[in-house]
Length: 550
Image (cartoon, rainbow, N blue to C red; front, top):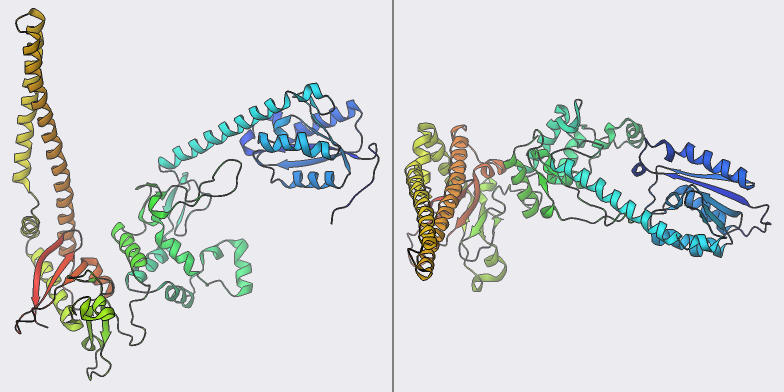
């Protein structure tokens, strides 16, 4: 409940309001708080104002009125203890012309408060001087808007150049001592980050990861601050990792070496509200610092988090479904679902499990067919296929690279040589056309050929040159695509050559080599028919179809 203080005007206070923000520039002595205080004190004494009280907002923007000292000033005005408010100029009161005008034109008069802005010659008891006040407010607002735009532009320029602008580095990094806007790896914490990513790759859920980190007494990130450590120690929560924090960490491209542009930019300079930008629409500045995890691992973890549940264990049976989300029905495109036959006498859960079309399982044979395959057959087949390519890579990387290129119809060096030869011929022909053009124009100016003849021939040359330039773009586009395809093939073969043959298949192991596995239905009319699998490998896609007896 507000106080209603009944004081005579002579007994009321004179409020001397000072404000300075970082945007006003800390090096400007004429704007400093001490300078404002001195000016206001001298003015009040010279003009006979008594009972002065300072209200100071140091470090607060004038684009809004969410300032502690100003709020106290408003409360005191509403309590009836303020007679006069004095500022150095209008911009000290505020730079938002709408709200500033509201205080000057409505709020102060309503509470019988005189307002004075010394440098702008504003005094609310002189109506002639007040006529210019709205224009001062608009100019101050425009100045603030321009300053805000320049600051945002400067910050954006620094971010797009690869500068890390946040005050606190992400967990796993620290600020470079030689460049405060560059990140360097903080190795002990970076190892924790790598462990978290690899645990997701191994099929661990976020809550499970949090429990493992707690059991291993890994300090939660916020506990690394000395000010927070004591509090968490008292609460016994030093090792309590938040699954939502883990999710944000795993989605943060900073760990792959990239900086994401502001996630929640402000809607305007007058508002503290932030606009949410979806993750897929955020701008990235790539390769700004050393990555903690490889790009393929970051991408793979992103796929796991977005497309699948956090655990790959079947809750009822405990079966480790290492193919979760990877098996696709060739007929309807649904994911194959694992089922464990509990009545089976086999000891190993993999020998009890099988997969079938999810759509068939839900809606029956009117929606699709079963596309069933036993888990053991699937595991053995995938291991055999991966090991086959590992052996071929060990035997000769160049031979395997060439074979994959032929399978995928990716042009090799001979094709590129032909493309370059064709490009040279096209460029020569364009040069000839340009020479013909020059000769043609010279003949026109000399009267050797008519204008109609010139138009006819130039049109023909224009059309030929247009087709040739289109052909150049097609060849260049094809070369770019083939170069990327070749790089992917080289990476895949190098990865195979660096691995030993697999003895078992794990959740992360299968995802290192394989993207998807398409399962075909057996021919029902043929009792000897096989189940066909089409394995889509990382980086290179589908190489062959495997027939397996299930």
